[in-house]
Structures are given as C-alpha cells and as structure tokens.
Length: 339
Image (tube, rainbow, N blue to C red; front, side, top):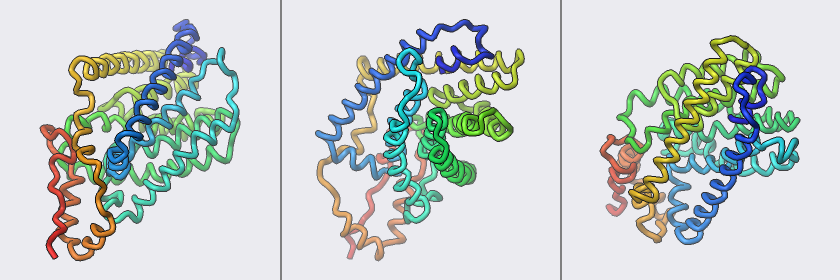
C-alpha cells in the first residue's frame, strides 16, 4: 500500500518517502520468516494437529494465507531492492496455490459432506483471493496467459461462492466472535480483482470499476486489515484514473484507516501473545491427541449410518453462538459403534 501511495501520481500531494515502504517491507519479511519458522516447528513436533487443520472445513482455507502474503511481498518489493523480479518467482509462488485449489475446488463440487453448499463460510474467500493476487503479480511481471488463467478461475469460483454465501449466511446462526474477522474477506476478493483486471487490460476500465464498486459496497459494513489494505490500494488506483477531491480524500481516508487497523491488530497480537498468553485458545481442541483416526473403517460405516452422520456433520459445520470457544467444542462426535 505504501509503495502505491508513494508512486501513484494522484497521491503525490502526500509527499510520502519511498523509505517508509522499504522499512515496512523489511519488517514484513522478518515477520513472515518468523511465522514460517514457527509453523515449521509445529509441522515437525505436532504433525497430527497440522493434519487436522488441513482436513478442517474452515481452517483448510487458511493454508492459502502464507502464499498470498508472499505474493503481496513480491508486489510491494521496494525499487531500491529490485526493479524487476524474475518471472520464475511467479511460477514458484503459484504452484502451491494451484495444488490447494485442486483440493478445495474439487471438494466443493464432489466432496460429499464437504460440498460448498454444506461448508460455505466467509473464510472460503481466501481460496479465491490467491487467484486475483497471483494474476496481479503475473501481469506486473509482463506475463499474460498464466495470470489470465488464474483470473478466470478465480472469477468463476468467486461468483459461485458469492451467491452461495448470500443464500447460506442468513439461515445460519451468528459466527462465534473468534471468527468475526472472516466477514471482512467480502472486501478482499473484488478489491484485488479490480487491480488485477486493470493490470491485465492496461487501464482501470469498466470491468475494474465494477469490481471496485462491489468492494466499496462491502466496505460499507465490514473492513479489516488485509481486505482494508486491498480496498485502500484499489481506491488509490481508482483515484489515479478519476482524479478529483472526492477520490483523493477517499484514498487518504482508507489508507489511514488501514494503517490504524493494522497497528491496532499488531499491538493486540503482542498483548495476547506475551502478556495474556491466550493468542491461540482454539488450538487445544484440534490438537488433543497424536492418535490418528482410522478413515477406512469410518467411511465404511458412513454407508450404514448416513442419516445420523449427516445430522452430526450439520452440527459440526453449523455456526455456533458467540459464547462457543471453538467450532469443534460444540460438536458431538459421530457414533459409529452401533452395528
């Protein structure tokens, strides 16, 4: 965001130094390296917990997050470090996203109880956003076919997810407070899509503006960290195309709000991690045992207990009340022992 603010003509009146972007980019690289190292240790010492996260209907979507973060780091690389990144970097970063999409999108269509109509929730936007961020980075590098492919895949699945969520959310109970931030992902996909399309087309045309206005409409009731930053960047791009006092003011307001939000979240994270020590209260439920379940026996019994299991799955995927500490904690384990 700070790189865009510094180099975009419509925000030159702010007189921002590129050094701000350089400092924040270096801090981001250090933080991501620390997070990757910690999660690698979790994979080594608590592999069963990671495996359960991978097969969890909500947590599986967050496996896209680190790769999206790396894509944004590549987009925000300061000119003083690198003017042009090698195109092979795009292929390296998009490979794990493609592999994850094959799993997630396949389950959406033919995953039984993991079909999109059963598991749809706002965190599914993460599996969509990766396509648009990848298309934006690829187009910035001068690639055409690959970014267009990912943009098309993302757009197709975004429309399906958008309609499914609007049909599903009103019929479910409120998400627990720990999952409230995922609502803000409604802003992320159209914001990044507008920038990606503008980069592919070479101008902020009507297609980009439609996606941007969808994001702006969503922003009217939700805004948070990464989606907020995406909306701010899209607004800066829009103000460069339609330059007037209103668009420039909106760009400054959203950029300031994104900065304050990220700063507040950083302070809150530090307090919960090192002072209150309750940063990960929900990990207990998913890492209670190192013992693996026996999937073959379980799925064999599914054929004879489909009615009971469907009810259990509904309870499992049903959004719990705000007093529930974790999605799994309010779920009764399916009974497969009656034969």
